[in-house]
Length: 410
Image (cartoon, rainbow, N blue to C red):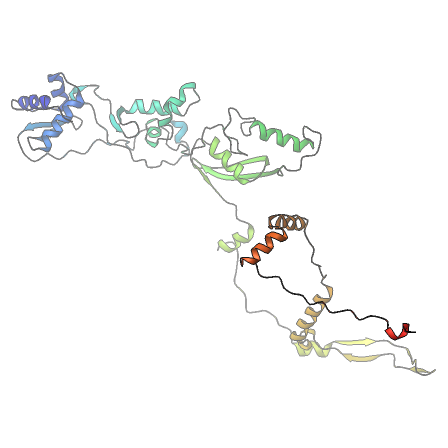
């Protein structure tokens, strides 16, 4: 809330001349925020207006109602001829960053030093201090956690001269690439102590108890291709569980923004690339005549003698028989072929008898335990009140004696 005393004194000073907020605060010996709140309240009520702008877009206020002068365009923040760090601009692509508006403090304080309003810290900062805070936040110093707010700030990276910095949350962290757990230190800059011990047990074939490990995942060699800073790179590891392990390793260790690639197989290249392969089918395909093939096929069967089992005689048969065999595709009935295949499948398929799993008896026993058992007296009372149905009467037939009475009569 604006101080009414400061507001009254500001209006009295504006009767003699025009002032900026910094000049008013210096003359009244008050803080800059108090003077800014008072002049803003007076401007809302129409008692003062902006008559112009001084150096570095500092507003100049005049007493009385009037139209505010349009603020001039600020100086370019990142001119095209600005040189960044050579190590970061080599083979890098500059990404556009929405930088804030810059200004200089009113009253000639810190001339030539550009400032801006930081939204994260809710403070006015200089460009150099913002870049220094970002460097400390992304360093390995002991007090780096003090600047955790500036760690993933794109404006801080631009002020520090890092054009293509990796914005991933995993960048620079001591996180295990296999189990994705944050640890104080990494073995081989990749694995935590637990994952390293499990991999060693798998390599030597035994654990601490001397038995072979069984629940460990298989370790295979994998590689992943990505692009960072305009350069195509490949990250390969000899022992990995899956491809996610490689992705986590790249996001953790790469300083620039990575873009992952994908190697398509040769079949996919054939479908996508139109310049390397000829997909045209010619019209000069030779098709053989089925009738000509059927007429030209002859099977010569040599049978010198045929013995007849019905008579004790030998019948001579010509040594050669001309048999014309038709084309397989012309003489085969498709429906009959399908029927034969189904019949052969039913004949060859093994009949699996239904089996009972090991858990079925246990489930039945648990189901029996849930059943409510009552005595005969309780059951009779429940039937009397109608809670249970009456007992069904079962008629038992009388047994017929297996002997006759007259056989034993005297």
